[in-house]
Length: 253
Image (tube, rainbow, N blue to C red):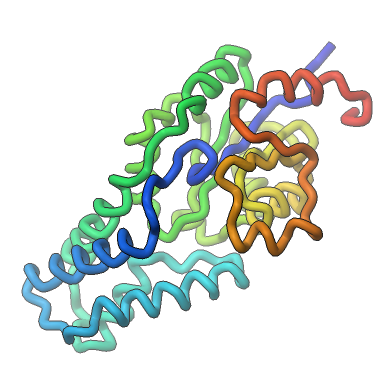
């Protein structure tokens, strides 16, 4: 009897990896690292530039959550620098500053203890695996993936920064499934965010699995009554028995 689920798509942050600190002080340190890198490259900036950058980042986060289009962090920074008289900053200088910024945040991300064992088991069972991650910088995500040691398990990795669209836009899910050659009806999306992962999966025709161990956030709490996943789990190691249940359900035919 053929399996009803052939592919799984995963979110990255707070699904396969977790952040070990309070965001605000870490972001303050990251902003300072970015400004220091720009200054070392010879750019003269006002003392309040790091505060202005953080304000723009907050606005950018709100905007991208309503449009589901990804404007990269590099684009935002380049626009700010142009506004302060530096319209001709080289890509090398820009990317170096952003790498300094993300080095600070990346050091606080760690692999979930059950992530690699579960991914290894899924691959050994010939499930096709994809990752779809919302992020403002593709390089940041790629480094986190390598740091976590999960790249070998995935057949396709898509980031919103590289694709230009964000979850819950169904197009980014369909793009991953096209590479995996699996229809939405035979795929599961596993993620921690109701608005992006679960609603996105539902809009794209996938079944949805909400992982809740890191999911207590204001955004998720605001969606509890309106976005309902097919299944909720607390840990990744609940996935394998869950797949047995999905594959034996006649209503998935």
